[in-house]
Length: 73
Image (cartoon, rainbow, N blue to C red; front, side, top):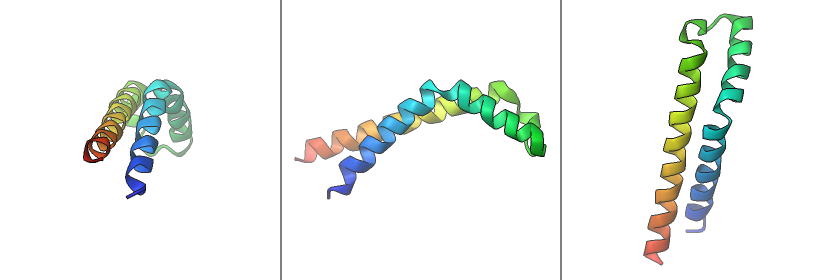
């Protein structure tokens, strides 16, 4: 069961990074989207909010995976 804490740490760190750098990732994604015109209608504010919320959810999921793993020890 060594994969469970690895999964939890990766999701926790990835979620925190996604929530912190949501604006930079959203600006990069929006600039790329302006080139291809796929989902321009979503806008920059929606992308920032979506990335922050998904980052928080990822971090919470990683935290709960680690918590259940540590409780089972």
